[in-house]
Image 1 (tube, rainbow, N blue to C red):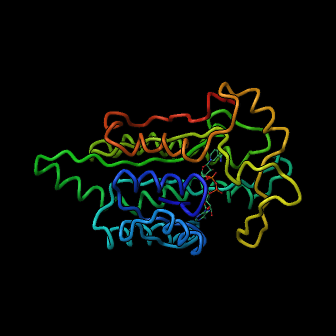
Image 2: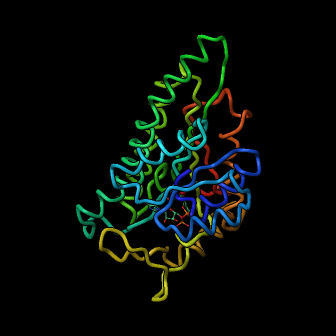
Length: 264
Ligand SMILES: NC(=O)c1ccc[n+]([C@@H]2O[C@H](COP(=O)([O-])OP(=O)(O)OC[C@H]3O[C@@H](n4cnc5c(N)ncnc54)[C@H](O)[C@@H]3O)[C@@H](O)[C@H]2O)c1
C-alpha cells in the first residue's frame, strides 16, 4: 500500500485494516507513517517501509519486506502520487518524466518485483486444486480518462497506468489475480486545496512543488458534479476496498470512477 502517510492512502490503509488485513505501508516521510500506524492502532497488523518509490531499489524493498514480515502478498494498492502541473509550453522534460515516473514507472516496478512471488505461489495453489484470488488496485484519475488542461504530465501518467492495469489483468488472470483501477474525481486532500501563497508544498528531487488547484476549478466542480461536492478520503477508499475484497472476484481489467459523477 503506497502513499499511505496521509490523504486517500491513509484512508485505504484504515479500511484494509478494518477488514482484517495486515498492511505494509509506504511513504516518503517516516513520521507520517508512524502517525498512520498510531491512528490505525492495530499493533503487529501494520508495518512500514519509508522511502521514495522513484528510487528504483525502493519498490523491490517494499515487496521483500512485506514477504519477510507477513509471509504473503495478497493485495497491492499503487496509490502514491502528486501533481506537478502546467500547460505543455511551460512543462519541462524533467517535470513530464517525473509524472510518468511516479504514476506509471513506479507501479510497474512494484508489480514486477512482486511477480516472482505471485506466479510461484499461484502455481502451487493451483496444483493443489485451490483458487486463491489476489488483488491489484492502481489509482488513476479523471484527468487520465478524460484529460485536463494544465495537467499534461499528470494526465499522461494517469492514462498510462490504465494500459498497465489492462495488460496485467490479462497476464495475471491465469494466476487468479484481479487487476483493476480506481479513478478519482476531486477528493478533499492537500492535492486539491485552493492554490494560494500559503499552499502546501512538497520537496521532490530538489524542487519545491506547489500542490493544489485553481480556486475557480473547485467552484466549477461543485456545479458540474452531480453530487455537488468533493468526495472524502473515506469515500474514495470505499471504492478501492471493493476491488480488494471478494466482492470483485469476477471483475478484472476495469476502471471504476469514484468522482460523484463528475467528468472533465
Ligand atoms: N485528491 C484527489 O482529488 C485525487 C484525484 C485523482 C487522483 N488522485 C490520486 O490519488 C492518489 C492519492 O492522492 P491524495 O489526494 O491522497 O494525495 P496526498 O498528497 O494526500 O497523498 C499522497 C501521498 O503519496 C506520497 N508520495 C508521493 N510521491 C511519493 C514517492 N515518490 N514515494 C513514496 N510516497 C510518495 C506523498 O508523500 C503523500 O503522502 C494519488 O495517486 C493521486 O494522484 C487524487
